[in-house]
View 1: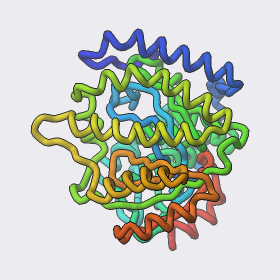
View 2: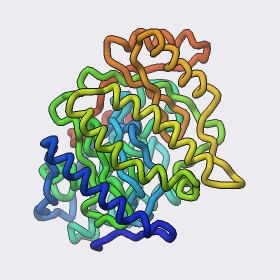
View 3: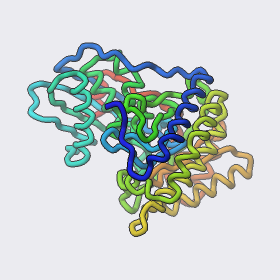
View 4: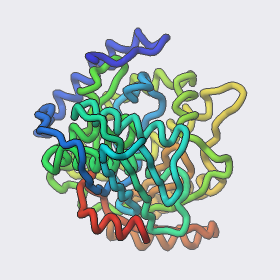
Amino acid sequence: MNESSIPQGFADLVAPMRTAHERIIADLRRHHIELPPPPHLPPACRQGIAAARAFPMQGVLKYHGLSDWVQRIAFLPSISINNAAAHTTTLVEFDPALPADSAVIGGVPAHGRELERIVHVLDTVRSLAGITSHARVVSRNIVRTRTTGKGLGTSASAAAALACAAVGAIFGPELAGHTRFLSTLARRLAGSGCRSAAGGLALWLSYPGIPPDESFAVRLDQDHELDDLALITVPIDSRIGLKTEQAHHDAPQSIFFRAWMLARGDEVRECIAAARRGDWQTIGQLAELDSMRLHGVTMSGSREQKIIGWEPENITLFRLCNDLRARGVPVYASTDTGPTVVFITRRDFAPIVTDAIHHSGLNVETVIAPIGGPAHLIPVEEALAELQS
């Protein structure tokens, strides 16, 4: 397929979004950020096993809404940062003797929509490999807090780990390290998995009608420019049972959505420049601002059943950032679909921020972590030990 679909009512935005995309590509080249070519597929195996690890992401310039649900193409480009506060470990085994695909997620067999999305990725790998072998998938999210919360980004790490392990099992380790290829596969389970596969501060190139093989992710901090960053995660559960898929359906109906799309190109280019000069504060400012926009779009996408993704704790934590900045502590709060908050600051300020959170009266957990890397293969024995624990 050469192009992705264009939703009704958005045809007039294709040209400006494509122009923004071309300017982003030009800026990437100007900043010496390599765009890898599509891979050459090596010979495939009918049978194989591999395991992978990937990190969840925290949105900087967020996204909601899919312009093509089959290809999982977004309406707009987006940027996120991988968060080593958690990770997903996934094992994939292809075997011609298996009667059907199966998946066990966190010790629970997957069914329905959850299994359907996994099989969609497996089917794509099988189609590329020219095989029909079914697969067994075992996956677990490893979180460094008692509470996982909603909005930590583990669907992204699950998608990236699945793509990496599936490719490693059938095509081998070299192709499993091709982040452009992995990101196009991970995208088919969860759009944000595209960026999780690339690692670090990653840009997902996307617009309505983009050719699917050109909708991939690229890492922006290619020379360790953001190694001094600290991510402080505060997991918060959603009391409404928030579903990201519903937010994707509702967001494009918001009156704010088109303006959000049209502003994105310039902000992506600003973020690229900030990453290359190590300007983490601009990245933090954009993440905090776009958290407000994301939830404004989400909450205004339906007249009847509005998705209010924040919890009362969020107001306190966002105000806490303002208070800390007034005291000279540079820190920025970011949320994705759910209420879980990730604070972005510099390592030497992390103890001050965590102390302020603990004295906020909210009785919440915190975990400090660096930026997470790309999805990567790990020894099967190491994965089995983690999956069986």
